[in-house]
Length: 112
Length: 111
Image (cartoon, rainbow over the protein chains, first blue to last red):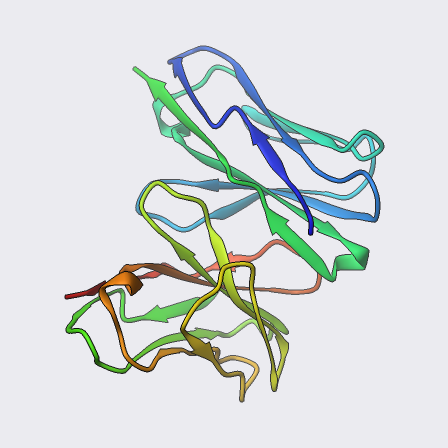
């Protein structure tokens, strides 16, 4: 059974603060790590696809890093805005893309 | 742009009825998935398919069933709905190891 954890479970920050959270996954049989943003009343949307150890991806104020050897990925948000409020999910794929599991998510609230 | 459609968006129905939730995608993806999500809770995988005539149960036990007769179509059926089936159901599709594209979901309420 694949075990993927995300921390913290929830987070409240003030507008303008920078923040980061973690996705932990098994360090063996790594294939890919996906980050999603899931806004209330919408469906999850993919943010990043990360496949190589040391990968760094960026989209606007959001960036992510990947360490497959130790089994973690960080998601960073610089200068948080209220529209960043959402649940951020990671999904770990192993075994050449055969198996996957979503983490439980980090719920971010950005207060104006 | 992802093209995956779920119908209905909302359904309120009485106990004991047979329900089919529709999910269709136009991207030719082999993999399709059904998730159940209660308000404020995690996504739980209840069914998935790797292609036509392939269906598997997910991590969360569900009384629903699925079929995959065509690549683009992955309907979910509840033979006899109960209040415990009240939830949101999300359908998704993807290529192997690629990010999943989600539909808008069906909010199901069983009275």
